[in-house]
Image (cartoon, rainbow, N blue to C red):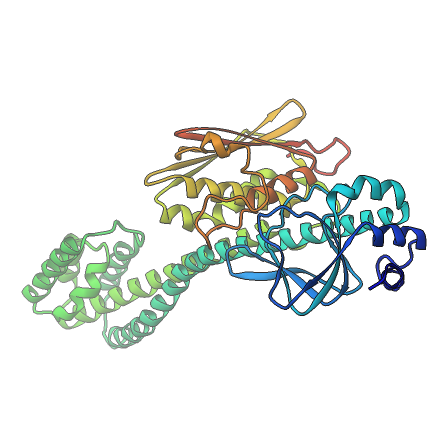
Length: 471
């Protein structure tokens, strides 16, 4: 291909074709033509990118593995530009760029960039706009991927948090059906009895004793078996049906109450009274358990809604950090429980609101607390502290884990840097945290030594003109 032919092709290039012909001629004269076959690697992950690539034809894709297998994050086809761009700080790509088909590339070495920016101002302007668009695309992609990874982590914990009360509801509802049958049969038997006023008073007093404390202490299997056996013996001694011992053992009824009932009511009616009382107790207890489980589910759902802030405003607004920190700890509670770690929240009374984006701030707390839980071992502790310092609110996430080694401390905020095994970390968490902190006009710092690591986030207090700036 002659130089003139190459300039003609550049003049038809979708991205650079609008540049003056003399600039295209300079580009053609100071570049090299490369041919790639399908499967050839243009740039390898971690390797230095040597220059600008003008794609004349073909198709190249950059794939990144962020813990869930490689996926394409950017593609180039004929008529587009990739690789190193003027004024870019790109050193090495986050993944391999591989030709999907036969591809022609015009490569300009990075050593020629200073001359390129001087001799080709129109091309330089085009390339700078491409660099800005690419930065926005990568930022959006990184945030999306990290959110998906965070969502995956939270989903596993939330599934556990919701499964426990849901299972409790299902279990209690199944038992409730049989207890209602027992209660109905016992009620019929009791209704067929002719009780005197004194006997009704005794039954009423016994019911109050049965229902006095539905939230009773938890007995060990041995204690429960002994109580059931003792009640069965009492029933047999009074020539009553010992099958009721199981239900009566669940209640807090005392033998003194049983003796008073036995003294006031004859045996046939007493049997119906005891069965009815035990069934009533069981029904009320199961209903209370279902209600408590439903409240737990409602609490978790409320925490999720508060954590995600799906209806977040498009502009910064006053944010209540107390609620945000509480919601974040709530959605991470199952992980803390699995690690046998304590998460303690200590917030200064009357903490003022900060100005920011509630959903983004919650993602900051989630990433930092999640990392802290990863760092601690058995019986570890994570402290979430918040207080006001001058015109800023400072949130500290402190853990008593092994600490961050000195030789990597300066790199922990770098994109794609992670010390976790493959598939367990994207290397984007702290990079995303830093970006979100900056987007909320805040600052982040870290101090670490063995046994104590502290991430410190300082955020601006909401102004006096902001609605609801203080509690």
